[in-house]
Structures are given as structure tokens and as C-alpha cells.
Image 1: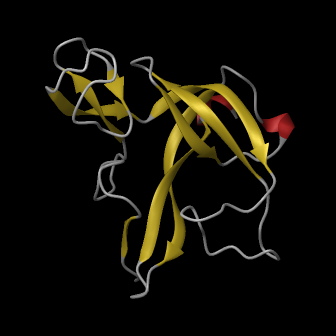
Image 2 (image 1 turned 30 degrees about the vertical axis):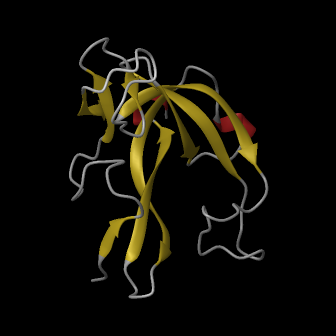
Length: 144
């Protein structure tokens, strides 16, 4: 079995189980941020804590990306294997909107307000052969 690890630490719970996004919450004003921040963008407070943002949300807006990602977002895809994919903002329960790749890649499969669920996906392998993972959202099973 191949090894896996997050592409970037601190974006989601690891090791996987019930995967959830991680962000920060200001202890002064309650503002949430993703990824986690050490200071608050709303009140400039420096007392923040890492919190779970959950793994469910609703699609706030979206588009279809029809070109390969550029560095530093490179994947193992090639011009021959690339397929367009959805990109959108998913609104979490706390009200924060998180930009994310979407599993769905067709206009007919996406609609504003639809329930979305978090999942992990492979991005590429590092020089040691370890599979690097990131997150994306997909239509929640309740919408299928």
C-alpha cells in the first residue's frame, strides 16, 4: 500500500477518518478564516484558535475551469489526460465561504445552494512516491 500525506499541513484533519476542514476563529470577535490565521482580518486581534469548519456546506457560486492548473497548483495531469473540473465557493455552517475544487465538472450537475460534502483527492506523488492529498467538495449524497 502506498503512503499518503496532505499536500499542505493544517488544511484538514489528518490522518483521515471523518475528514473536516480546519480553520481559525478569533477569540475576540468570533470571525472565522480559512486557512487558519494567527491574526484576525476583521478586528486585527491576535488571539485565534484552530477550529473544525466541518465537512458539509452549500454551494455559494461556481464555474468550470477548462485549463490545466499552473504552478504551484500543478498535478500529475498532462495535456492529454486533463479534464475540465468545477471550482466554487462552498459556504460552511459558520458562514465562511471556502474556495474549492469540485468533483462535478458539468453545468447540469451544479446549482447554487446545493448541499456539498468534503472529500480527499490525490494531487500528485512526491519524489519519494508518497501520494499527496488535497480536498475538494462533491454533491452531497442527499442531492443524488
